[in-house]
Image (cartoon, rainbow, N blue to C red; front, side, top):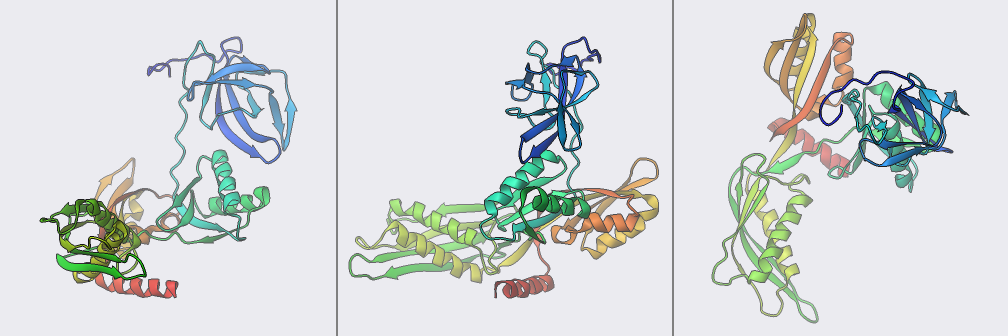
Length: 404
């Protein structure tokens, strides 16, 4: 592709050199090795090509033919050859290397969407940095492996195509980078919200030898629509709380919501109105009103009908028609809500459903067993919805046991 238009370039050893990086190897001794598929022309050592992604020049200092773990230097690589080039400055899998006079991008295949995730943590204390470095190197080598850090649940999550893929990744961490890991299920990022309005007074008073701390703010909590987030309204009149302390009230509320509600999960979709308060000319400070806002929020939250929210995913399952009944029954058992079914290619059926994310942690493995490996699915986050009362009680007990 050149300038947004598709063009055809002949596979000609005498033409302009053109290559695509189809794999990256992270060698612990050599460094990064890029595997190139030469699409046109002839590559020779010290050739200079332009990376079409970064628009920077890359010098191919040496060309190698891989034979097992050994790299044998070669003098040239013609169109159709596979060649290894070590220590390119800023090259990733999928990049196109082309002459400066021919700015083209070779279209490649999209990496497959990861289907199964696990959380990993280093077995030895102090190996966190080594683990993240090793994981990023693995991700460079394997386009089907993704790594992310979930700040909300404090987990490092790796995602791949299935159990075997993830087991091999963990084994390579040990064998290649000397990092032993422990695995655990991915925690579900639950949230909390309220179902009815409530009011409370937050009062923070602390007397010390010098200046004390004093702040009072009256808060009104109201539920918002799902996904609205947080809204703060300053309705204080008559100088009950000086203007310079209002931002501290809002910050205290935000910190209290992030710290978690009744079950310790972040609070969302709440409108908070600060409508009154008190201050002291000497003892009041920003810290006083931050603490007062936090105390008032927690008291009002307990009276506002707090409920637990769980993430819900939109699931599209493509299966042979003969397995459609089994899949529908399985989705109902997972508390899924089927939105409809459509005809796919051939005798396939596409089932679309909304399913709680907590019920889908092992769906890649379960669907493979259910359909004899003939089913496939796509998944994306849809929304947050209240957890059924019985399940909320069970989750609350489980969380208390984990924290004990």
